[in-house]
Length: 21
Image (cartoon, rainbow, N blue to C red; front, side, top):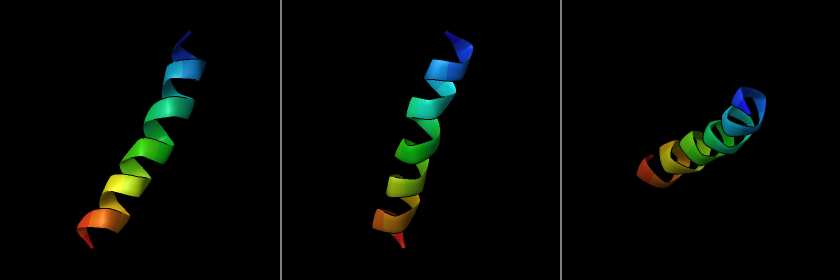
């Protein structure tokens, strides 16, 4: 489940970073 959670978090963080920038 950790891998699945990471797969969800990584793109989410990337989108948040792009939206903020």
